[in-house]
Length: 134
Image (tube, rainbow, N blue to C red; front, side):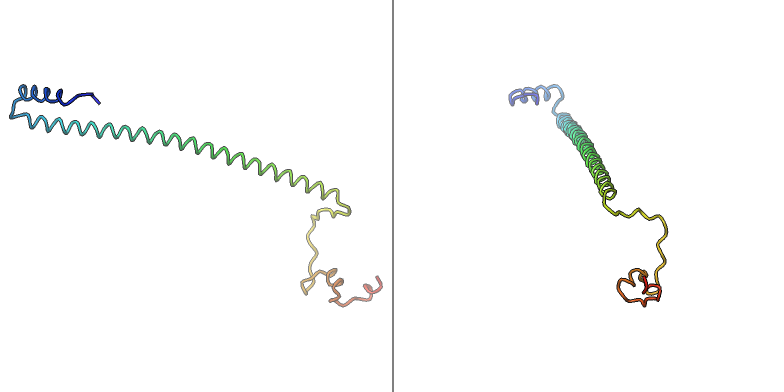
């Protein structure tokens, strides 16, 4: 980090021993060690925060791209559904004998649960004289 060799550290230690004195040198060295440890933890915390912010930014970009893709898929699906519905309506309109959509209520059913027309077709209901002539 500072490009300091072993010989330079020895010179600094000898100067510190002369300037500070042998009584206070251990206390000063301990204090410097604590300060150096705090500085390393602070630098590591800053690095961690920066990497978290970078990851968060990448996640935001990924989220926006996924949302755009989902929106695009939703638009495509709705467009295809509309096109299919219009094609089905055209086919229904052009079909021969296509019944008109009924807006009235359905006819009440017979007590047996089947419609009178169905009962006539199946032959399960007795025919009235008027029905026999028709």
